[in-house]
Length: 134
Length: 83
Image 1 (cartoon, rainbow over the protein chains, first blue to last red):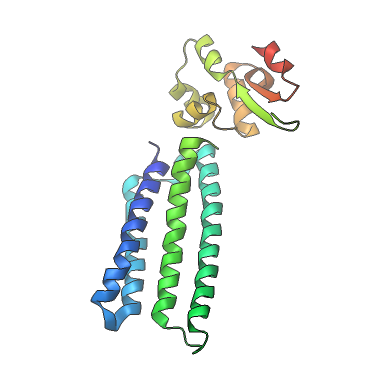
Image 2: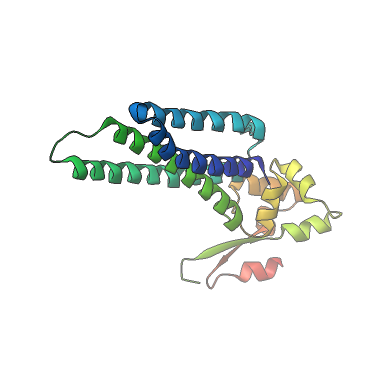
């Protein structure tokens, strides 16, 4: 397994775990809902950063196939990020259009889930592209 | 295969064995890619850049068209000649 595949596995596990943690955190800290959601997001980013050091991923070690897979996965995941943000924003508008007041915590949730969905899609794309070929 | 469909195959595996059973690792080192990329190339799961194709051909002392074969619908005569 090349370092980028290990990185993708790490991202897959981390994004799944931290996405699952958002809900219990919100319930545990009802008065600090926004802070809890953003804390989860920050912890996710920190784990990814630390994990990359542990996996030993270095840009110099990636060859042209690794880079091609990385870029293609990035294209897929950013498209998904855009779609999640668009659909989420429309859903928030639809849910609160009568009051025109979207709760801040829901915006924080949308941002967090969109970000994690992007990483999840990136990791899955990388793993699939290594297996299927590019 | 449709009129405009094409597929790139290669003779890397055969050429490796013709060159003293050169390992995938060794070829990867010579051309600056990982062993996994050589495996993917041999399995036709990766189309290399022109630069990498030229490097591989040079590593075997062959012309690039002797290593890589473009198979097109109705135009695969080159493949038959090369193999």
